[in-house]
Image (cartoon, rainbow, N blue to C red; front, side):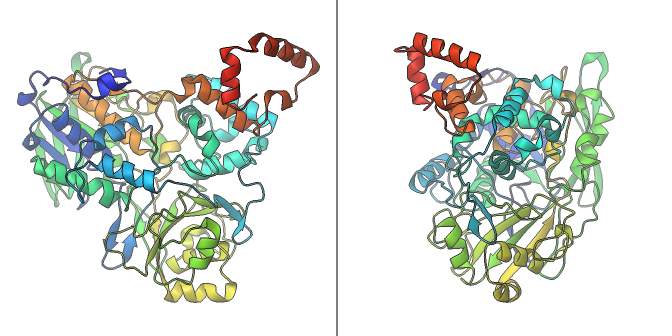
Length: 590
């Protein structure tokens, strides 16, 4: 497997890999990574679909990419995916998946046209004091010391950040800035999360620093991601003959680790309560989704909180059983145990059944939520919320079956263990109605109307997700297994708990990238995997980022000590009339 960029590799169809007709594949997990692996096996590996077996513990596919109508509870979503133009492998995947609404075009085509017609732009990124706009909206409020801390983190090698937390490399001067407020609520970082992951995000997304306050860099699907992305992939794969087996727990994968090699030899399964084993040969490729952020999710309803008691879950147990066999298979305990009590664990789906709350939504987002246009363009964060509450309203209808009078709102609180500002309870102890009331309070609904709207004009379903931020647990480099561990002949790890360089977890791109790298490696596909977008290596991007990090100051407006100012004047004289001066002007630094 190798990486490259540019059109030459992107448009090429690889030759059929040698010996692929003698191979088959078992994919553990039918989330985005598993479905992407199946697609790449067919499209680029040219494996027959009926040789591919997808094993899923749930009764339906999609993994964390959900969006369902539950007959007993109502509409349920556990989040929304923020995508951007430089998700290179994601778009490489979806250019090959036909749209369900128009099979003559791809999912990428319809997504591209939609976001051209209806671009993302937030008119109310942060609010406080019951629906009021943040007075410093748009200003990153970074001091010179905070900027230096950012630069110091980026300049620190990844290997030197093992187990370090964000609040161990940043002081309060940074953590009190608008930059951190925008950044943490957009990506779900906690102060005690991994400094290593924070560094990767800074380098991966430095081209978005200028749009943190308006979210114009983001792209969104027409409906929830299950209907817009997962269902077209399922149809594509089923039409190709891929075999899906649901209600199947993969308890263990036996691996022969002798002779400096790693060969999966047996699958230990339980399907519909019945135990089974599948013998494997080196020609049987196994792709494992190890770990899951939505494993063990529980749900409440209008009058009951989501239960917080849970078992470890199949995906974690499988990873533990694999890790016992070889240290190269990672360290799952780092991610699924000793998770801080203050972490984000609760989100909720609010379905409004009339328009009583619409004026308050519209006042913040400056958009009619019934217009069909994307409403919030990502999260609206509530700065003075004890829970650091936030909400997102996507294009409506968010579900194809949604009624015209309904609006679906997703809410989440990054801080657990604290009582609300309106509801005198910890977020994890709240019923659906109480989570709705807290949201209505923060968007400015008068107190005398809050209870009636929440109880009689909304249906709110809480979700408790114990592992939702486990991607960001402080870790060492070796805690995640490589996509294809050294010496592995037929075993690969896919998804956000597998390790690939430079890219960032908690993204759809990471799921697809690991799947692509796994397939290309095990089948020796002679086509490049698109490299991670090289924003951190682009001088123009870095200059533009510095302009915004320094509060949109010109070079001459940045205060420097006397000696440095003298040097600056000499340098500016030397670059006058040169290409460097042009670059600085393009970045607004001159």
